[in-house]
Image (tube, rainbow, N blue to C red; front, side, top):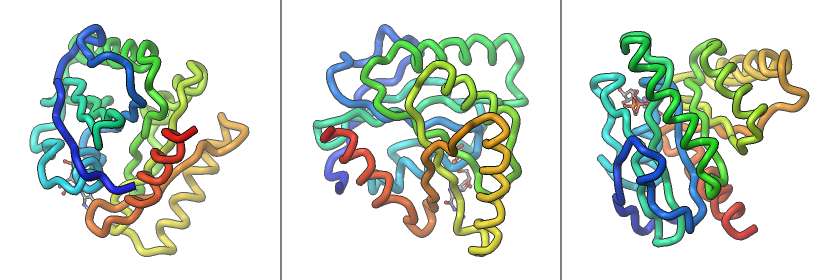
Length: 197
Ligand code: GDP
């Protein structure tokens, strides 16, 4: 699939104000600085559709984009910001979880993980919660251009080993680079496939 049109629809912090759930929806989430905005811009061929975040924790809104007039791409606020006061963090983590649980047209949540780093508890716990809540998700390992192929392979193996402490099977995953475009075709083909089924 090629993204020919990406139209901004609405930003909000209230699930009730999201667009009608009448189209397939795919959302992207991850820790601050994981490369979420860059990935969304790469997928949609836009320089600045999702704002790359100079200031972590600033964009705490659910952003809906209508893609090819067919499906919604959703840019979700990140989680696990150390610098945001706890009360505030809890408040918007609650609204995030509400969106994830309530949005019945959410076909897949892409959980972004920086391929350079060791598995982080905040990501592992979040994915565990997704599993328990039966939310369909895929992992996207980002910034893979920053690693040599053998380093990437070793990191993926280590990540899988960590996942197997909790999971019986490794959730589906993609490897990506917003720099080189790695993963673009695979992610968009995956979305197209799910849309057609
Ligand atoms: P966000 O906070 O998750 O939206 O992350 P951004 O997309 O703003 O990216 C955070 C930083 O990582 C920026 O400096 C990006 O240029 C950089 N970055 C993001 N994706 C990639 C990638 O695939 N490769 C490389 N080399 N840098 C990346």
